Length: 271
Image 1 (cartoon, helix red, strand yellow):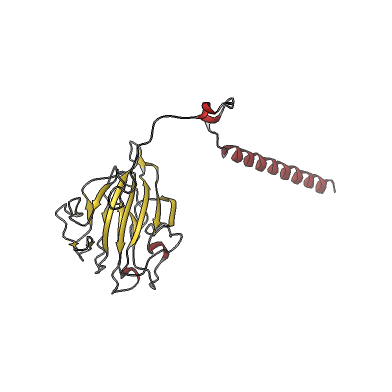
Image 2 (tube, rainbow, N blue to C red):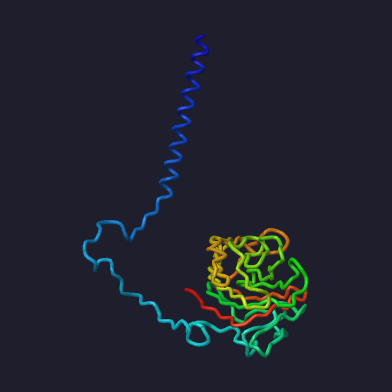
C-alpha cells in the first residue's frame, strides 16, 4: 500500500513539474514575441512638436504623367520598339512580334525575352492578354510568365473555363503560392498585373539570409499578399537559392503556341 501511495505521489510531483516547465516555456515564447519600438520608448512627449518629422522629404511623383505611367517610372515597353529588350538565351535582338496596336506577341519556340537592364526591388506594371480563339487546355492554353530577377515566376495563363493545378494557375507564384482569387477578364481582353517585389539577400558566403517577398494585384484584386518566395520556381524539383544580385525582368515563351500578348510595361525602382 505504501508503495502505491509513494508511486502516486511521485507521478503527481512529475506532472506538476511538467506543467511548470511548460508554463515557463510559454511565458518565454510570449515574452520573445513582444514588439518594442525603441523610438517610442522613454518618457512620452507632452507637446505635438516632439513627434513631428520634417526630413527627409519624399520626392514628388506625378502619378499619371504620360499614358498613365508615373513620372519616375522606367518605360520598358510602349508598343513602339524592343529597345529595352533582348533575347534571353543569347542576348540578340528580339524576334517576337511587334504589333500595330502597340502590343507584342510571343513568337512560338523562339525563346524568352529579358530586359537589358537588371533590377532589384521594384514596382512592376504589366498588361497581358490571351487570344480569344484559344488553343489547347490546362497548362497549354495561353501559357507565359513574368519572371522577377529572371528567376521567380508570376504565372500567366488563360484559366477561363480551363482548370489546372492551383499552384500553377493564373497569378500563382509558380509551384509555390496559390492566388487568393482568380480575377481574370474574359479571354481576348487585357489583364493587368501590378507587382510589388523585394529581392532576396545573401551573405558573403552566398547563403540566403532574407527571402524575397512579393505582392500581386490582378485587375485591381489582391491575389498575392506579401508572400515569401522560397527560391526559384522550377517546373520539376524543389526551389533553389543560388546567390545573385540584380537581375532582368523576363517574359516567357512557353513553346506551345501560346500567342500571349503584352503591352504597357513599366517599372519603378524601389529604395
